[in-house]
Length: 168
Image (cartoon, rainbow, N blue to C red; front, top):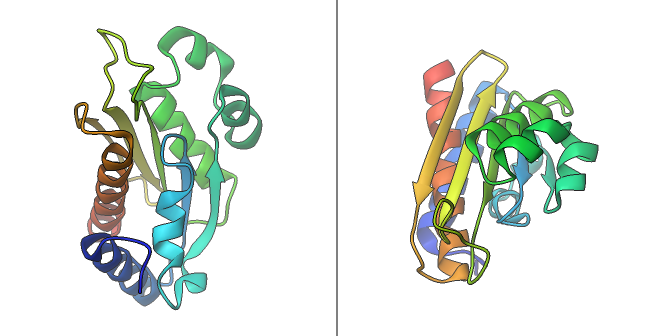
């Protein structure tokens, strides 16, 4: 029995199969999901051939120390921004052996939102050594912390599928 809903488990299994077939590896850089993306991937047998590492960078300091997010980026745009998500993906990619990295940073709630950055706002990015780069802004709304985090996992897994299909 999986810890994750069936659709997340199926997406993770698809990623493991796709990346295994191509001999490629994945890294994750997670803030609001706290490791759930890496957890979903490693739920699948055979994931050790695909998952290189996961960075849980919940604090701004961790984002800077572990994956090289620039302090100026954090001060200028904030932790929850497209700029930070892009730097997180870049840092995870180049501080790992992965071919593709996905990053997420957002406000899962229930508090912490503001008019400009409401609860449920999540920025995701994916970057591949092939040159493929994509950012996605999601506004899941105030659906509850658990549901925001699971929705983010779903979107991140979809980005990993798109990245490998585009660069393959």
